[in-house]
Length: 363
Image (cartoon, rainbow, N blue to C red):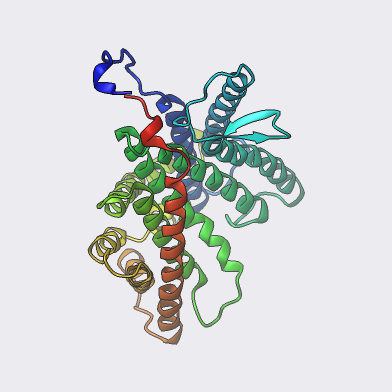
């Protein structure tokens, strides 16, 4: 049908934007809670299960989960009434539990992540009751909580990728990918458990996640500038959290009557985990787009691993560690960066095939 012959739509909000925005808003809320919680543990320490940063984490998953559940229930009701279901809202609907429910694939993933967060939250509560409060972020239940939020963030990317032919879909993919990349920096801390005396597994993991998400977004959008847009968005989040994290920890400590630790230096925890060179890596990805995808991926991985110690020296001071372990880390990061680029390209193509957004989108 020729849309030019149809009267202008009276819809002020594009279809699918509201639930997608709620899922993205929930993930950003969780991200705020995470950076706040990390800084609290670093600068203050004592907490309970229901601290304000924790409540931000829980509220974020609740918002994303409830929005996903509502979409699934509405889609199921429309399917049972033999009513057409627009795939622009989260992608094609798939049957769940023997087709008891019809769930748009994007919201199925985001909702599953939120449900897993509840399960791991109960485990975390039991863990704290048994062992006390954790001194580290990478305890088993915490890693499960972080992975479950990451799954919700992947669902958010999928939800917006379906609408990539619309402006709000493009902006959503960029924002959701940036949030996922920032969040993955903390998830990569779980790699500290990997016994690797010859290399730094966290630096390799940081390079892998960064390159993969940049390439995934770029190929999902299928347009020049996608990787750079994500890199700039990550830099904006890093700058905002660099100010917010220490400020929020101090304000909350003052409000609860707790002192800052004597050795608290005010250096933000989560923002400092994000590679400051990410924008330059994104520029390299854009400039080398005509080469086989593994080449810019390897370059990006090597650059990130090479500059992680530089960033550490600039922020914390100290000497630059030029040794065999440093060089091996760069080589491994280049190899995993190449793999990440190939995976990112494949994931981006998968996102583009979630639904025929161009044919099914509505102005």
